[in-house]
Length: 341
Ligand SMILES: NC(=O)C1=CN([C@@H]2O[C@H](COP(=O)(O)OP(=O)(O)OC[C@H]3O[C@@H](n4cnc5c(N)ncnc54)[C@H](O)[C@@H]3O)[C@@H](O)[C@H]2O)C=CC1
Ligand SMILES: O=C([O-])C1=[NH+]CCC1
Image (cartoon, rainbow, N blue to C red; front, side):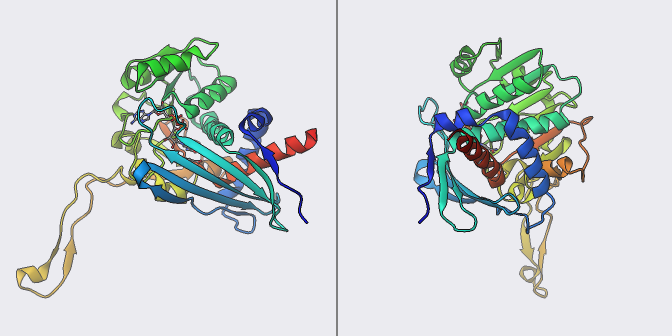
């Protein structure tokens, strides 16, 4: 009979998962994923069940990494919370399985994994795409992701100034009060982003909050929120002017409102020639005046050398989150735990 699974709470996962260990594993797995070798990695696009009555979603994120012997799934819920709600908007549990026998080997908190792996992947994007001279970091949002992004970005890079903006100024102030180093609290998004070299968007917004006209040419944007096809954080100007990188092309096509909606401007009608008394033919005019923002490459395609990092341009890394990122994180946590027991 199989042994009982190891159970690890948020505190344990937070303690065991370090950015120094995590970043090289994420770089390696994302590079491999982008080679699309299904004998090595299988990761379908996340299945999402809307919880309409409560403005929430349940997502299931499985992944199998054959060569590393990792079989995993994360189960995550995410909600659009009312302003001032004390409930977390993202909650998750990660399960590791024995790939050969199929039983569960570990059940662990997924909130810490989600916060750290997402921020670590954004930091990898910044390593590759941020301008060589990056002095100002701007974080939009003041929740869990904002905090993990602050932690890893200030650990890996040296900024002269860090700015934060949140919907309610007191939330940005509370965020800053928890930190050791000085951070500027901004009253508007515009004030926060003007002149910034690196911008993190980590909000629950469903309409654009970051406008291209405010963004310094050559800046890098790590866009973490807007994980639904009808949600956005970034406007059309920014999406069309920037070189756009994504974590997974399939995920971006299915889930990123910033990409999917970026071209939809004017919709023309379809009409049927039979209406005009001729033979029956359906004619349709172009659906939109502008074409959609193009995805230039996956982060993994840059990591594995198939595409360049266009650091000289304004760049957007559109992150949606991937099961493989959770899988390598969970494996790392379990390895560390095993080494202590
Ligand atoms: N790309 C990825 O892999 C992941 C993305 N996410 C997404 O990142 C975003 C942030 O997640 P958490 O930090 O966990 O949430 P959180 O609830 O801890 O923080 C959300 C922040 O967004 C702000 N916000 C909410 N609605 C807003 C609006 N309409 N306009 C402007 N600001 C608004 C809140 O005031 C708060 O500062 C969410 O959209 C979440 O779905 C979360 C996990 C992974
Ligand atoms: O990757 C992830 O866990 C999530 N992305 C959007 C909400 C949760």
